[in-house]
Length: 271
Image 1 (cartoon, rainbow, N blue to C red):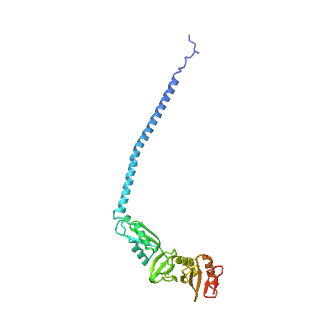
Image 2 (image 1 turned 90 degrees about the vertical axis):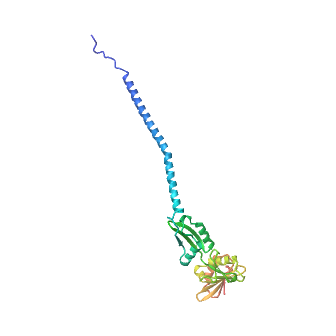
Image 3 (image 1 turned 30 degrees about the vertical axis):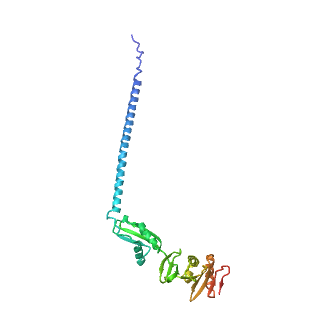
């Protein structure tokens, strides 16, 4: 007779077999996933050179099209010259001196050569030449402003700007520009510089009323100054102490006398 309390032993090998199977499945899926990632990366690596090559070809085509449009086609033809900084007859002079060739491709216009011609003309302090799509060459200039008219040999009048640059030679001085003369045959460059320094130190309200400048052989400056209905002579002297001399002239101009001598700023004289 069997003892019912006795139980058969449980199998002990099934659980380990199940865990091993699951581990194998997980490892297989991980390997497959890694393989797919590797294949995607390899495919992307194979496509990259083709993509870069395509981009390069596209850029070359675009550059070639731009070059053709700018340098060889009639689409971007230079047909207009625009002048900035001058108008009327002055603008016409700028165009004439620049001599920009029209009718050809805009990008083939030699802007450097046009700028060099304008600089050589000396009539403009600043010059810029540029292209403006689709058809325009832009000439931008800053004209020189006459500050002095210098009597030169042969009866010529040299027109000088604030930098001492002679930028024009005329038969008669421009209106409102004081004439510089000298006891010598011609006014030296140092004499012109001394005159410019003297006028540049004056208050603009006084400078507008200077009617004539004289420079001695020793570069001593004097000038005539219109004051209401009279004309006074200002003995300026040599270069230096410009601010002090200008201040003294402003104070003494209303005093009696026809001459203001500030050549020695510490001892100004009116007489």
